[in-house]
Length: 96
Image 1 (spheres, one colour):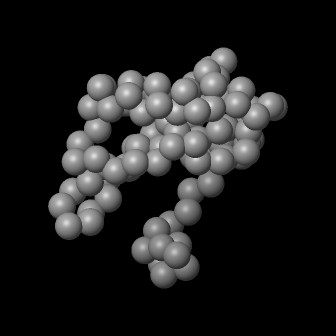
Image 2 (cartoon, rainbow, N blue to C red):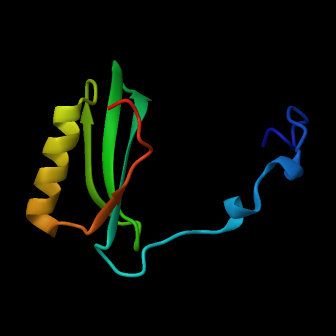
């Protein structure tokens, strides 16, 4: 949208070729991805999500005032209780 509106000049040479390669786990429940997003509802809210990397199925989604290490651990534990323990996980290695 920004490019069409003339607000951004595309510079495709800057994008690495690996950015076009899509990664997905080969088997369901093989790898989970986790991330959280800031979202403005009535106050600032953070939403944590655990996804199955193979199917992109949302295994767990909850909203919190602020995500802490305890919340990450708790949501992971709750989700493994229901879905089993994945052999691996992926995160963006954020501060939490």
